[in-house]
Length: 268
Image (cartoon, rainbow, N blue to C red; front, side, top):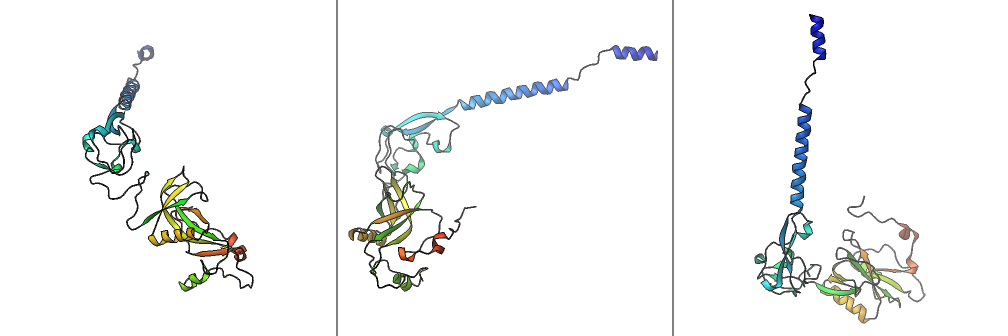
């Protein structure tokens, strides 16, 4: 009987375990549910406010200035926008806005703006002066950069940007001009370091720099004297350079020319 029982058991089909099939089925159902939900969410949209016409700086918004378009609910943060015109009617714009511009909270203020804002959103610090400066000697520039300003003196005037000013201010220059009976040599002078860039008009090749009134007047005085000005694009986190730093060809040293630049904050 034991042999026959063993044979019957061998011939009897074993029942399959249903658990793997159940798990696979549940996985397919869950995947289908999440796929459908993602497709549904991707197709969702919501209203955002845009400009229906050009609006100049300082104007109080009316309903006629605004329009509403639908954008995908999931979009870049830069396109967040404002959902309802009722939230912005009566507010003032802080810059010139154009038709179809997406309205953002940073473009609005509850009160008439006290001073203009540049197209990139930058505003002049109270007590400072915007000075137009040619970018011809600088090249590509953004408002995130800083600018060093200098001038050339072809006549080598000893009373303009001379080293004695640094000594009088308690700063010993790194390079002393050699004593010579020869006529003064032309030189370049770095006047200012790290001027803030408010706005760059790339088409006109002009950058508007934020300077103190005295710095601004110094620039105009150099222009009145006919001295050529030049600029340098300078990192916003780089150390400030000495003011009125004069250099002529007779002061060049190998050590200064080959010295490595100290790494600025953020460099590896």
